[in-house]
Image 1 (cartoon, helix red, strand yellow):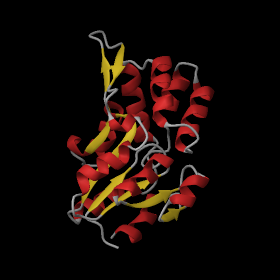
Image 2 (cartoon, one colour; image 1 turned 180 degrees about the horizontal axis):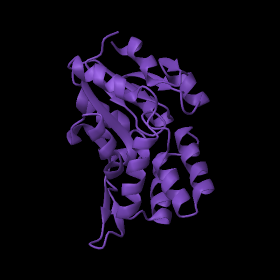
Image 3 (tube, helix red, strand yellow; image 1 turned 135 degrees about the vertical axis):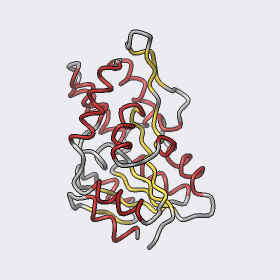
Image 4 (spheres, helix red, strand yellow; image 1 turned 180 degrees about the vertical axis):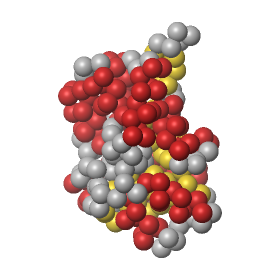
Amino acid sequence: MNFDIICFDCDSTLSKIEGIDELARRVGLGDEMSELTNAAMNGIVPLEAVYEQRLSLIRPDQASIDWVADLYISEIVDGVQAVFSTLLAQGKEVHIISGGLRQAILPLAARLQLPESHVHAVDVYFNADGSYKGYEQTSPLARNGGKADIVSTLKGERSLVVVGDGKTDMEAKQAGAFVIGFGGVVDRAIVRELADIYITDSSLTAVLEHIL
């Protein structure tokens, strides 16, 4: 298979962390946030049911976002840079589609040579002093089905593949995407079941043979 557009999830796909869980841990709310994240990623509860709840408890400020942005980079999954270099060298259109916080993901995207316009995630807002103000509540990526909406916008008549670890990534099939489940960081039964192809290799380079 040779796809025109290749889209990647971020958390537990490009980086070994779940950004929101790390932000929670930073303010002493780690365990309960991990449970909420897992419930959403395994399809047990809708994403929108936990999204606002998590952020209103954590209230991440600018310094926290900068901290987790560094963590995304330091915990990058094996093979990610090689995969992006290969795809971009071949002229592929590459995007990140994530329910994570956009400002935290942008530095990783820049490291991978992706333009900001190819990063689809949820904006977080700050007050003048850097304290938490809110998030983009109208973002499709803060609810179930949002990734399918983004994929529909990008795809047109072209072939598109989504690589990700969660139930929300599998929803891209509704918009005609081919979906590769990546279990190299977290192995989820629901993703193994729903993905067109499922990969357990710890290096992301294992996806290349399926998308080129």
